[in-house]
Amino acid sequence: MTNLHNLRRMFLWTMLVSDVVSAVPDLAAQTRVIEITADRDSRYKMAGVRSPEITAKAGEQVLLRITAHRGKSWNRDGSIHGFTLLRAKDRTKVDGWDLLLKPGTQEYTLTVPNEPGAYEVVCTVICSEDHEGMHLKFTVIP
Ligand SMILES: [Cu+2]
Image 1: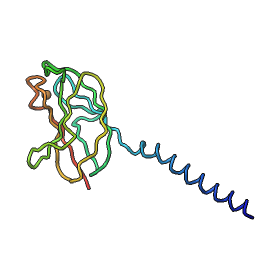
Image 2 (image 1 turned 180 degrees about the horizontal axis):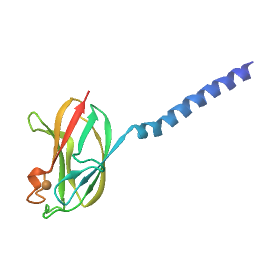
Image 3 (image 1 turned 45 degrees about the vertical axis):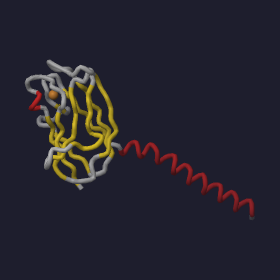
Image 4 (image 1 turned 180 degrees about the vertical axis):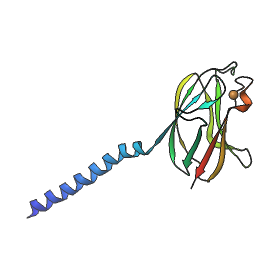
């Protein structure tokens, strides 16, 4: 009887461990990937969308995959576009969301602000005469 008892305990333990292990890829799968192009014409673009905007859940983890193409001008440090998240109400920057983009594809795993509301992504690199118009609507939902 003791052996059977031990066997049962071992079985339960194995189940527990395998649950924990299988939770890891699940977590990765939950991270939403948002693909954006910061284009040479000083526009943010998203495939298949005419006027791109981002909607995300408060506190959600997202993976930004941003591909940047160089416009007419760029920063001395090689940054060709920026990707900075501002609170719409007071234009303050959100911590951790102040990105400088290099040519090519780059990925950032970031946490969406906890406060629902209107935000805006803006470019911080003078990338062309159209730089001022380089922004993207970003909405945080509860
Ligand atoms: Cu710009």
